[in-house]
Amino acid sequence: EADIYQTPRYLVIGTGKKITLECSQTMGHDKMYWYQQDPGMELHLIHYSYGVNSTEKGDLSSESTVSRIRTEHFPLTLESARPSHTSQYLCASSDGGTNEKLFFGSGTQLSVL
Amino acid sequence: QKEVEQDPGPLSVPEGAIVSLNCTYSNSAFQYFMWYRQYSRKGPELLMYTYSSGNKEDGRFTAQVDKSSKYISLFIRDSQPSDSATYLCAMSGKAAGNKLTFGGGTRVLVKP
Image (cartoon, rainbow over all chains, first blue to last red; front, side, top):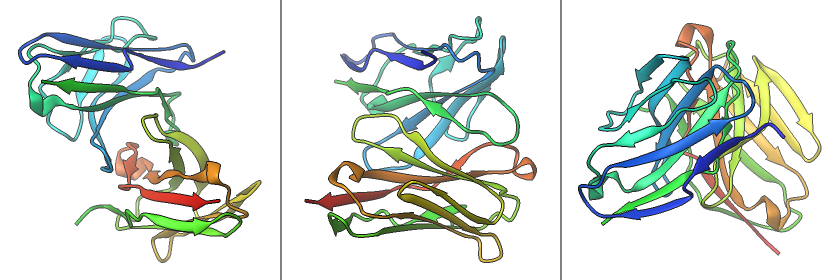
C-alpha cells in the first residue's frame, strides 16, 4: 500500500546530540516537505524538495538540514539538538502540479531535554 | 496579519449536530482550497478538496468556497464523536507560488 512513513514516532534526547528524523514515501511523489508544529499551533514549512538533489528552506527559519539523494527518502538532521527544537515534525509529499494535495506522515514528536 | 485566518476554537457540539467551520483569507491568488483533519498526535489527512468557487459534497461533509468574499466553509452533518479532531483549512494557487498556506486549525469536540 502506498504510504508515507516517519520514524521514530517519539524521540527524547539530551541537549547537544545529533539526530536524524527519517521520512520515506512509496507513492513515487517528486515533492516532499518538512513541517514543524507546536501543540495547538499552525504548521510551519521548514524545508522542501521538488526532486532528487533539490532542497530549499521554507518559511520558518530552522537550524535543521535536509537531503534528497533518493526520490523516496527525505531525512531531516539536527547537528546539535537544543530544548528549543522540542516540537512535532511532520513530513509530507505531493505528486506535483498546481493543486498541492499533501499526504502527511504520522509525525515525530521530539523532546530535547 | 496572517494570510489565512481560522478561529482556533474549541468548538463543542452534541452528537448529531451540524458542525460549521470557516476560514477567511486575504490572497486573491488562491485557487485550490482544502480541508485537512488532524487527530491528536497524528499527521493531517486530506478531507476535502475544492477548486475555485462552489460547493462540494462527500458523504456527511460539505465544502463551500466563496472567492468573492474570500471565505471558505466546511460543514459536518450528523456529527459523531469520531469527528472530534482539529480541522485545518489550506489553500494554494499558481500565482501564489503553488505552496500550501495553512490556517491555524479549529479544534472540534463532539460530545456523545
